[in-house]
Amino acid sequence: MKAAVYRRFGGPEVVRLEEQPKPAPRRGELLVKVQAATVSAADYRARTKHVPKGLKLLSSITLGFITPRIPVLGMDIAGVVESVGPDVARFKPGDEVIAMLGGTFGGHAEYVTVPQDGAITTKPPNLTFEEAASLVFGGITAQAFLGRTGMGPGTSVLVNGASGAVGTAAVQLANTAGAHVTAVCSGTNADLVRSLGAETVVDYTKEDFTQETAAYDVIVDCVGNVPFRQLQPLIKPGGALLSVIADLIGVLAAGLRSRRTGTHITAGNVPFIAADLAHIAQLAESGQLRPVIDRSFDLTDIAQAHRHVSTGRKRGNVVVRVAVASTRRPSVE
Ligand SMILES: NC(=O)c1ccc[n+]([C@@H]2O[C@H](COP(=O)([O-])OP(=O)(O)OC[C@H]3O[C@@H](n4cnc5c(N)ncnc54)[C@H](OP(=O)(O)O)[C@@H]3O)[C@@H](O)[C@H]2O)c1
Image (cartoon, rainbow, N blue to C red; front, top):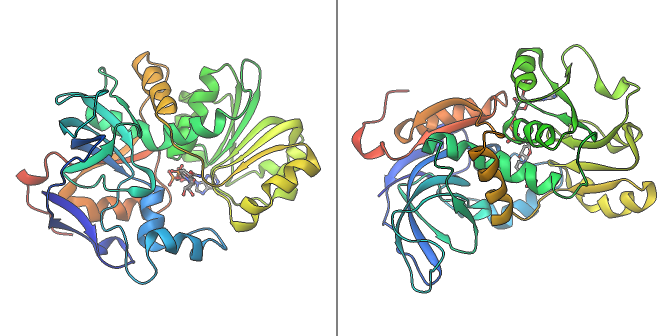
């Protein structure tokens, strides 16, 4: 099978197409023929080892110290179950699925194995594979974090970094729950986040949201550029801070800071579970969650997709069409 492989850490050019052995599903696993995936912020971090302060050593244990330990990136997929291993009852060949592979990666390949009890669910039938793939990374992350709050009608939610994969999902999930959403993004993305349900938009290139007098029940921080001491006064008593991206101190101090301030802090990695993905899929099927795709690339052009993600400016998601891989030659960069 064709797979996008990286053998050393570095720029987008380190990712190349290679022939790899097609995996076989083991007990409890499905073999999925991947139709589409995304190049996400996590792929960027894994490829470059550009991780938040203090997390380099810890991340090297999973990513590799000198050379990449997991050669095929891609945290999310939309595809079709090709075959199943022993003891698989929940899915059968031909089922259309979406899955979050998380830290095992492997989605940038024509086939990947997924445990049936992993973060996998039926693909919303009304969406294309590309659209469905674009829901997974941001959607499951936003749901995993927001699900830890009592968010509901009337809750005030600020999303910092509202135009990225996680941000665009968080804005929509909060809006769907009846929350009042304030989105922080650059002016160029103001119309996008308004169309997703943000009531108020703060253009961070012109205004500093930490200088506003408003306070929120929930702050979702997808950027990690504001210290806790500046965020905390913006959170109402008993409110929540969801640090989707946090440095080592932010992760380690979350418990202590929660006890000291009464703010419920979730920082760093959260488990990705099938129930959250199923919720996302159901919202998408009923039209309450919209896929946000910036650009799509063929697998043969994966380095270009990485290059676009490396800008840090993508709007929503960058999709990779995997199923066309064997029918096209790479375009010249
Ligand atoms: N904890 C977890 O399990 C978990 C899961 C997923 C992701 N993450 C992390 O969460 C972060 C967000 O992920 P993502 O996928 O949403 O990233 P992303 O899609 O790459 O984010 C790109 C967006 O960030 C915006 N942005 C950049 N600088 C900004 C600033 N100063 N203020 C506001 N917006 C800014 C950009 O908008 P403009 O072009 O308008 O600036 C762009 O739309 C990443 O660091 C990622 O590694 C963590």
